[in-house]
Length: 443
Image (tube, rainbow, N blue to C red; front, side, top):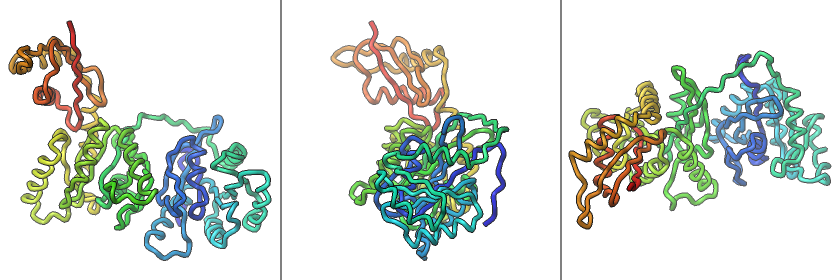
């Protein structure tokens, strides 16, 4: 395995390694102080590398949660998990090798520990699930692996401070570090299972960052990846495929879908990924989630390499999207192929353009002039013999754009609100952004 050269201006890296279900994700969440990684009793739930930053005193380091690896399994999915594990080990300055103190020493622990030791990295043995002083005796059976170990309980937080002190003493903190934290723009990639979301992430990053497999539901956690493009810092969030409720039977599947919904809420922009020929009602439901989340959106038709008669079939697909996603007609539609990396550059340019529009702030004078002109050219209909009057308007918020319109009389109907939105779009653009209108009555 090729060793990665360390950048002197980067944070030191700690990788959490171990068999499935020994508590790696629980420790990861405990160290970063938030529930970023999903935890479940289902063995092998985590698969991809999950990154976060941990602070202890005046020191900071990156921490990687990894998937539990079944070392003797020959299934393709476990080979992919092993590859992700090797990438994490290669990147790490320190490895926290976790074992289950309640279960005791397992032969698979020995095999995996020997594999890690051959990588010639600093390694600290962490015995988890030691929930009381009486259970400390369980740790002695792990001394054949290493004479230096720390007992903890990631669930109850026991000995976590001791662990952090030890970690910081073993890490190479560089005195020359000068990190400028620029504002990150969050991009959530959402869609049904197996539409190519993870492949799209890897194509954007130019590396095998997340596991890609033909089995639907391969991605379970929402995986964050930070990358830079032309001076902008993006946080790419690969989410689990959102299934229909009837199909989410297992607990871990429900947790994955809930987490995907939460990530729509925290994103600046969502990429709604569709397959070329399988547009369904579930796609419409996911689009509604994005619309309710009030974030910007770009519709990505992936696997465009499967389209044979490109001109004719693209027109048919675009027409179907236009009809079924009529409530999201502001979202640009792009055709990509993650497999061939086709359309990736155009997608990045479009994302940047949409985010600029999403954060656009228009002048009060221009907005008021536009809305009053639209009002005079097309007066709203009568309600109970009275006509609504519009007095003034202005943009009061960005990301998403929010416009306040002061009126006298009844609230305008849906058709008239749509008319005003269209006028705003014709004048100012706001491509890819939902437009919110609020009406206030004035004397």
